Length: 379
Figure 1 (cartoon, rainbow, N blue to C red):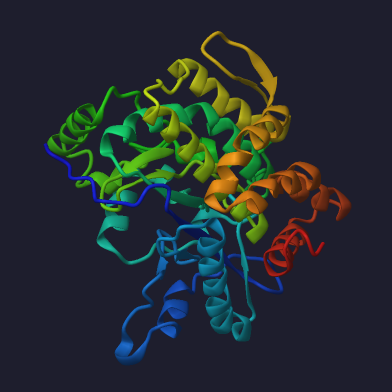
Figure 2: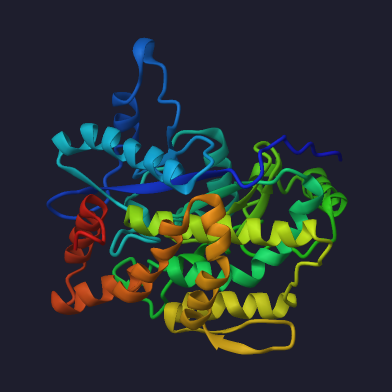
């Protein structure tokens, strides 16, 4: 099976941001995405070109265009937030983004009426119905498809950093799970989701997709739901491991981190170097540690098994990547990683709110809604 890889300008960036719809008074999820999308239709009923639905009717997804800078991509989706609010605010509906809703129950949610979603639920049953999860997806343009698999394999070393920085799902269906990112554990229960297989090259990727298609496991390449995957249609690598983030500052910081990591490794490939990668068992252990402990995780750094506190390695990488960020025009956004390290990741902030409110999870939802509206810096 030959899979074409679209032409894409190097290190361009695109962002997808999934937002949950919640009742302003109760904090409950509300299944009105179809109404919101209808309200966003253009002349003649044409759908919004960038704002779409998702698996559940409690979610809208904002999709940026292709941008040269992180600032441009973030401004694009932030502008879309304002468009959605023009529809939701009069309805008494707030927007939040986190890896999970603190107390929502799967059996109260409605599935979007699309054939692909009904097929997913029919096949996956209880696990599929429990997919009350929200995330961010970041696409980075790759100019040469021969680089895609080496870059994907190399990015797995930094998956725990991304998982810890974005972790925002400590609660699930009203329970404190003890995990910083319970979403990471839930999502990988779906067929083809979770960590990618370690492949040697693009031809190996094509063979994998052919095997999955011939056996009916997937209908097309978009149903490969790896934490990091090639996105042939757009000519990108797509990083999907992150929990949803509740502020534009966090979105910008994590997107800048990803863009810089890809460009940094791409430059090493240009120089004829091999991008280092971890053993698959180390990658799996790192994902679990970051999911469980978040920014308190001790992670494995290299093939020799050296370990380090993830916060210390993030601070080191900020210094390493700063020259790359200057070149890409995203230094200010990269430095905002310090805002997450200093203020705490979302899972930490949510736990603090719950503690201060005698365990009230609606209070956590209100705090998430306030963060999305006002940001971290303003607070």
